[in-house]
Length: 469
Image (cartoon, rainbow, N blue to C red; front, side, top):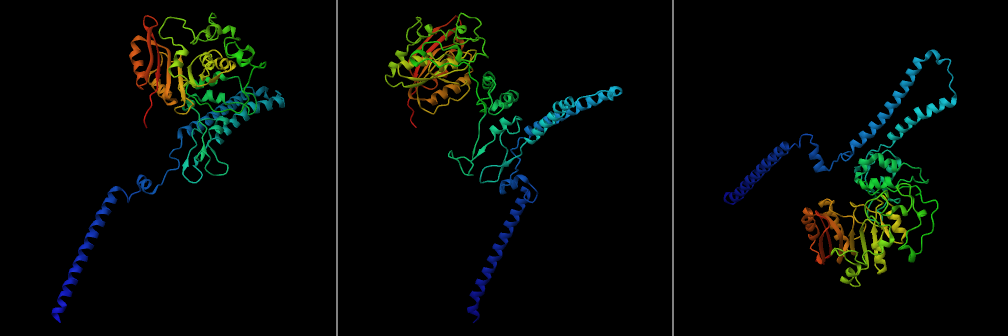
């Protein structure tokens, strides 16, 4: 009986020692893990660790404290100013208290004083405080907190209403697949807060001020896109019907169809090149239709940089249908291309003259965009991009780089880039040549000729290559 028990006892001892050994290992591992957690700070109050492991997020983390501080400071300044005015008024009364009891002030005068010097500043300060917004729950389904962008930067209510994100009225994802619609403004608008608030300060539904020049100034300074407005645009009081399309292409428009308030000239005849006070420098002679008729159809000089439209269209016979004219002008290039059954959109800025109005009154399409704006076209759609008289040697190379890549985005494979009479300093020519050649376009035409002792003209017609994806 003893012999039969020995194997069982031996096995039991082995299992017992094995359990003790495994238990010891568990204890050692547990103690070492506790030490690691201790030194990592898990037994202290460490917000970073809690946020990392448990997703705890400070709801005011993205809040623009500086904008809030600016708004509060603005309100405090208004209140300080009101207090100073009231204290000054009391001091004046103290100085003249001998005659104070004999002085009579009408109720109308007292009412006016209260409205202008007391109630209005108080109301302004009150509105400024009311308009300060704290973070609100972001999105329709989640409960994270996020500040509405730039909301505390501006005081004018119309700007705040415009930039406030708009959610779906039925509480669902909209057709664009987003929870909110964000109205966009240029990032530099915050640097021109005073001008933007002046631009957006109007009565809803009434007539806008004749302030397109203020809007254009904001655009030039990076406040683009501008916010939409809810006021009625002014037009000429004596606006006339435009000429028929068979006349309008090569005829000066009616002077009465342009608002001339913000120009030096008051009619189209004043814009002729022989007038030194015409108010603009680029595209001199663009408003002289007899000269404009000769462009791109007859070579006015023997310079090899002058290409004709017929020569360019022959490169891609029947393939050029739509295009973009990127420059400063009155739409003559688009008019000539229209005669060749090609639809061309012309970029235009009112740089001292009504270029946009002129192009539209000729029956063509002006595109009101600035140089630093992404083209509002989809990828690979244009057959032709033509540029003349705008991009010259003054342009920064990095800015030109962004522009060229944007043109490349818009041009379709096989589309043509026509660089027309680009001029620069001779010493900068190599830099600009590299910029134009970096995209590896095929050369169809290429010409360089002297403009003056230190400057050269450059013209080229380049074809965008197909690119395998």
